[in-house]
Length: 280
Length: 279
Image 1 (tube, one colour):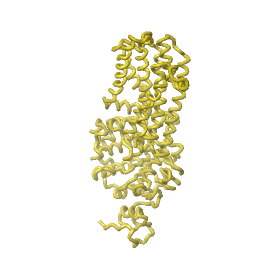
Image 2 (image 1 turned 90 degrees about the vertical axis):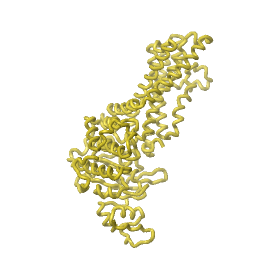
Image 3 (image 1 turned 120 degrees about the vertical axis):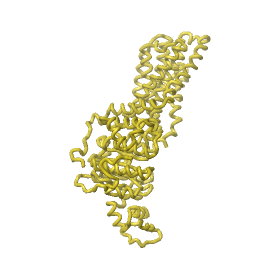
Image 4 (image 1 turned 90 degrees about the horizontal axis):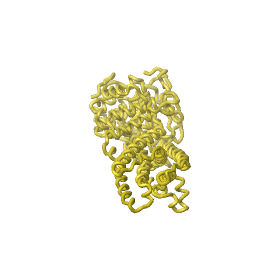
């Protein structure tokens, strides 16, 4: 029998509140998933590569006819690459979350000391790794096929990349909340979310192209500031700090909203018993 | 076959008599899902170091009660204390010393058995994880499946791995929902023996929901009977059998499920359960 002194040794508060070991455990869980599934590894590169090939060829053709592209040949390719950062950032968060739902593993995870925000941390870190792999792979492909190096943008590229991936995290966490709340009924919405925003983000055209009433909505997206910044860099060779700071400020807001929704839905899930029914 | 670490399969359950405060204390627990009352004003205590069964028919509220106890579900009202801590306020203090197994949750199928246990070892912050996993794999006879994906295991093998996951952190309180469901009698017997051995060795408190009355009679020192979300009776298996004037716990279960109380004289109407013939 246990002696009374062993009744409950409470871990220190800091360890209870946040543990990198638990985050590491979740990262391991996702890395093991890739280790045991070559199809998931291929998926990391397949779509970005297809997009890159398609838009690279379009660019090659338009270069002969379009004056804007003649000024900056990499405009479309850079836009494709950076759009994919946002898309992969969001996808990386919610597809891994769905893996837990498919596996009916939520019950096990949340009777362990794992906190929902530790899970969110693991999801965004894995999303970063996945996005870096996709972006790096398709960036190298663009260089090999079209002799265009997106990496020539230098440090601004890092700013664009981080802002877009963080925006993807915010969206991804909101989508995770919807998946947990509504189950796989929300899956098609989850896949389609970034495409619904794409016309507003000024990926391939300036925000000014949009109808005036829609432009304020576009400026409320961090991605619009990033893509305007990208065009300013490639066409005017200037780095727009104002756009960067706007994107950062909006991203702080979106990430906070995303995390807030994610954590709030966990509370709803515990009231409604959704953690055990996840997926149904 | 699972080696019996400190117990033969014929070993008897330990008694619940203990002067220590209960490891689980539930007061006026209630859970509503819209108009449906799944658990209605349930109060009970589970003695430290005891093995207690939560019995009841389908929809009686057993699984809901267990998930409320581990905090996967929040109660509508009531109070749950586990290991002296309020589970609604200080769940994070208890979770490292508690574990749960249930057929309603699964482990990732793509991950190997070792990978799955390694992940949970990290979530519980365990040291000497490799040695711990290998010891459990030896004791529960799945060492040769450690490199196999969890999804490729048979139902019996999966149950043993799930049990290993539930024992990975040496829990002081272990909650189990139908721990031997889907197991053949041989494996079910060895799992019961292992659980009893674990309980004896560590003094852990075990609370299990089961439909297997033989299992309950064999390993449980106390029984809580639920019907329609309410606790309708409790006691040792022997006391309940005597109180209802029956021969087995299964007869008592049927009596309670069919709303016959211990005070009825048993000569009742057609609605009364048939008394089972003695074996």
